[in-house]
Image (cartoon, rainbow, N blue to C red; front, side, top):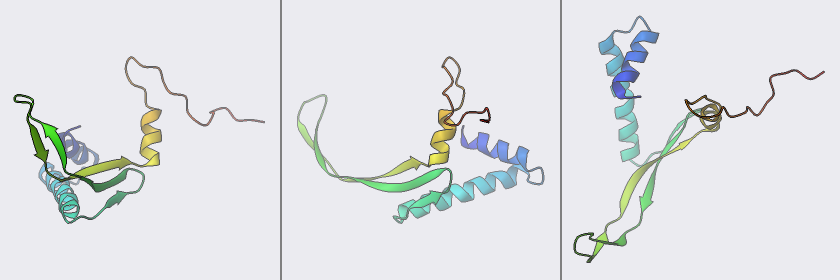
Length: 111
């Protein structure tokens, strides 16, 4: 799903929102999330997952053309960890060409 798909789905689901309002809402949320991560904050959305910043320490790498060693500097990278509800929801979804995962709880009542 792309950003424009998300805007279209939001405008479709909430008829009182125009396409422009839905686009503004999505942009505002994503900008707020980006700013929070840039400040080093953690974002947690219950039932969906959490976003945080991971530190990649400096390391030695190789230039593939010359083979010489190159120092790769430290990096801070965003990291997403899905929540339990999202992991379980994705695990039980039918995907084309694959077998359906069996749910953890049986649908038939026990008597």
